[in-house]
Structure formats: structure tokens, C-alpha cells
Length: 110
Image 1 (cartoon, helix red, strand yellow):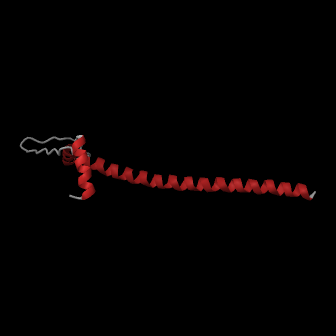
Image 2 (spheres, helix red, strand yellow):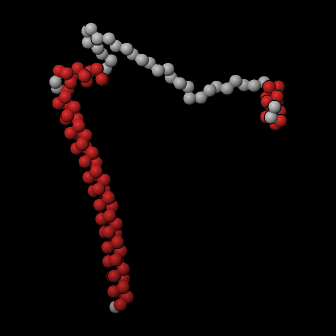
Image 3 (tube, rainbow, N blue to C red):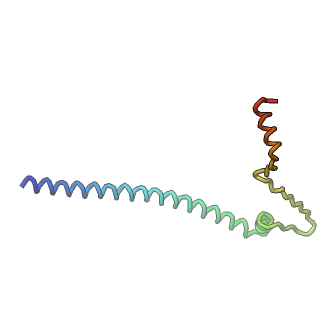
């Protein structure tokens, strides 16, 4: 009888542990979704403010100027392009004699 009771207690305890694991996982997911909701609401309010600004003629003009390279008649525009820098240099290959000389220069610190 006691053996059956221990087996029953074992299965109940195992079920409680599994239930606790599910609860903790669900709580983590809830917190994650809650933070995502706050971020989404902030983004929504920012986008609504931008939409209100764009609906005015000045806002529409500013949006077009910021987004596309356009200008009104009578305005000047300067476009500055930066050259693309190389991230590495291609080294010239040395001849055998030059490599030999460089080795001895480094060896004796000339």
C-alpha cells in the first residue's frame, strides 16, 4: 500500500514540476509579447505624428526633400559623393631577391 502511495506521490510531483515549467515559459513569453506591444504602440504613435505632418503642404514638401533628391524651382542643390574607400590594400609581390634582402634586414635590424 505504501509503495502505491509513493508511486502516486511521484507522478503527482512530476506533474507539478512540468506544470511549473510551462508556467515559467508562458510568463517569459508574456513579458516578451508585452514589451513588443509597447514598442509597437510607440512606433504607431510616431507614425501617426509623421502622417499628420505629411498631410500639410510644408510637411509633404519636407518629406519629399528628405526622401528623394528633389528641389523646387529657384532652389540650388549640391550633391556630395564620398569616394568608396578600399578596406584592404593589395600588396605587390616581391621578387625572391627582394624577399631575401628584407629577411636579412629584419634579422640584423639595418
